Length: 279
Length: 248
Image 1 (cartoon, rainbow over the protein chains, first blue to last red):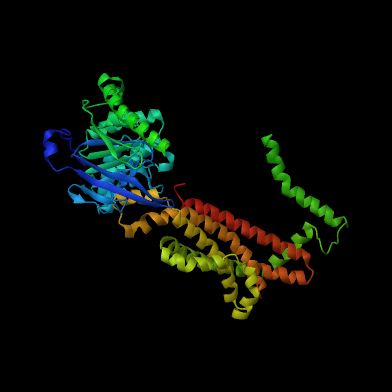
Image 2 (cartoon, each protein chain N blue to C red):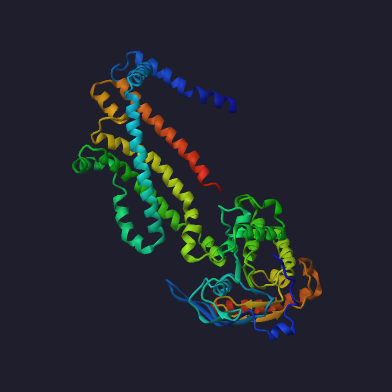
């Protein structure tokens, strides 16, 4: 499998091309035993091809729900979602997803797990295994190609999950707090790995997290969501140079961005607190 | 300390047998009702030498194995159907939940009415006992398959119609295997009920006959044999189970 180098992200040219993802007035309402809850309230945003967007917000703000809807896992919803120009109804092979838990198939080896996607798309066992071996090398797990998931650490399992999601060469990669279940050290290493990986794969990435540091380190653009019902409070462009690594977290440019984001988050936190206090 | 434990463990059964021998020979209890192990051993040897042991063993094992295979096959098929398809579950689960707690032994009179003294009746009892255990484990296993695995499979392009064979069956396998292992023990319990429903050969049958003739040594020998084959069957199955669920 040849990996194409990424074109320059979020440049003027890409903005003129059709967005990879278009979310317009997305609203999702859940029926609970206490009546209806508005999980997501008229969320709209676009993602340019090859762009890395992070959605950051507190727990329960609906950011995972938004991601699941783009993935085609959550229906029905109000509003429009277009991926690569076509409407989303159900899971599709050009959209890959990594979840907070690796959800590796426990009865398959690492190689077989990664080969699953290509096999479902009709590739032969040899072809699928070859694709898997390329990805195994890319995520640095060559020694574990025949190992079973229960023998791997959490970080290694997530690396396999990422490789598995990339096996069908998706145009869009959705990541739902993939490093949330890992310890701080592993998380930092995984963030750096993802940054390296991102420069090698030509995919649009939407990454959901509740960690503002993680969001700014990884993204080209950060979308800050309010607490439930989820709305987009602010879009912050992250104009930090690439290639990047987590070591950028001490730079003044980074810190000023972080301050801007924290101001927005703090203002929202205060508003939500006063609102719940008032009632 | 560990060595002491191993020593005591090894001596446990021999000590018990010696104690039994002494108590039985001491005259404290009626020797007819409570024979010592030496008498039991002689009775068993006679049973083996006459050849009846092997025909009894064969008859009992055939019933257990055939009943287990039929009951397990039905249990797995129906468990997958009720676990996977809500409509099927709504139709069958209430019925199965009501029938399941009825112990097979309670069916003996009606089995004799329906099947007379034929093998079919005994098979019915074993199948009944095995079926409900395997059905329930399979049903639960299919329902408890990690939803995350299914979502991951969907995102990788697995068509919904292939989800059962690709993900659900293997995901449910650990539960199914646990159900099967329980069913092995249950099939021996129901064997007792089955052979009480009028048999002409078999280990429990032999115990019955011996009891009627006050051959207590033979009774105990039969019980020990029953316990032994049940134990061996469980061990064999658990080794097989480990190999079937290869990823654990």
